[in-house]
Every structure is written in structure tokens, then in C-alpha cells.
Length: 124
Image 1 (cartoon, rainbow, N blue to C red):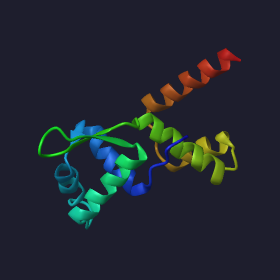
Image 2 (cartoon, rainbow, N blue to C red):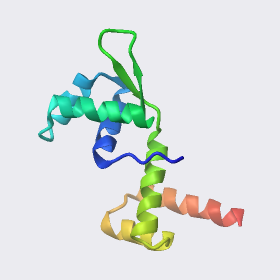
Image 3 (spheres, helix red, strand yellow):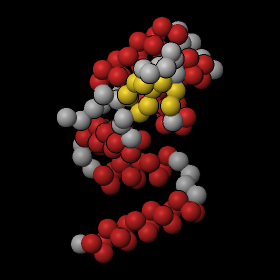
Image 4 (cartoon, rainbow, N blue to C red):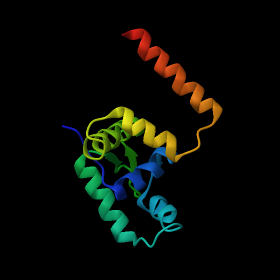
């Protein structure tokens, strides 16, 4: 079964991926810098994320520490597949052209994309 994090859960996962392990207070302090987030809301979200299998909780110390179970790549894959299916009707070329036209890519990024496309072409 594929786990699909919500937008709020992804915000929390971004923090945990960056830090490695976090307490609810750690996550809340970072979230509070950019949004009006209550501590109990953050706590509840992280408990839900634990129940969903997105994070694991170390309860051996007084302060519980949370660590991501789902990887950044898994979350990206889930999000892209959802966008691809719902917005681009399954067309990866339309998705890629939209992304490349919306954002200025560096020469290094374009070179990486070309290299990846060449690898895909050589596999066929």
C-alpha cells in the first residue's frame, strides 16, 4: 500500500529529512517561523503520521524523537504520480515541458536532464 502524505505532513517530513531526528518541539519551532501553527496541532499531526507509518517514534527518552520512515524519494514519487495522473492525464512529456517552461533551469540541470534522457534512449 502506498502512503500518501498530506501537504502539512510533507512540511513536517521536510524538517525531519533535513534534521534526521526531531522532537515535536523542534518541528514546531521551525514551522512557527513561517506559519501560524499551534503546538498541539503539530503534536497531533505527528501522532497521525506515526499511525500512518510515515515516521517512527523513539520513546526511550523523556522527549520522544521522530524519524522519517518514508524517504524523500518515495514522497516525491507519490506526489509526481498523483500530479501526472490527475493534472497531465498520464502524459510525462506534458509534465516535463510544463516544469521546464515554468522555471529557469541552470546549465548543470539541463546537462543532467540530457544525460538522463540519453541513458533512457540507450536502454530502448
